[in-house]
Length: 137
Image (cartoon, rainbow, N blue to C red; front, side, top):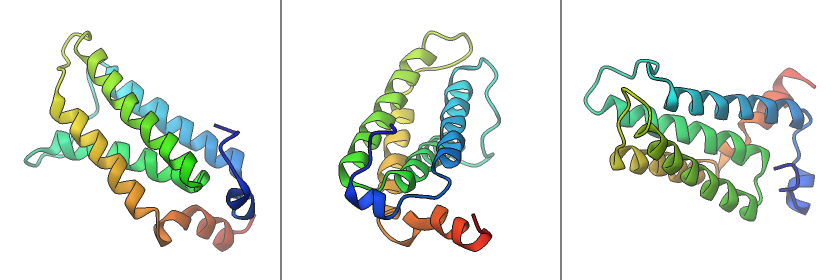
């Protein structure tokens, strides 16, 4: 996704772009692993805790990358990619022993992407900039 930045992004490009991108890809790798491992990490012990975990995971992914690539077309591409990733991983879970295919998980993933899209349109879309400004770089 290194080519997903336009004029607006260049004006607001993060100083540690590559580092933030590396962390983001680490988050993607963790979500893929957590989705496919036969013994996933525990989810919150609340009603619909599994769905909350899906919402948060995909919200974090979208929110993270939306800060790195804030242009509208980049965000559209990211949103589509994360929704597709959630669908594909859910189908793959149906093939992994001890895991279940659930349409509701796909919906929670998509809701997380949409929520992060909306949240990062405002000040929350500049958290990584704030970190760089606050802690130098």
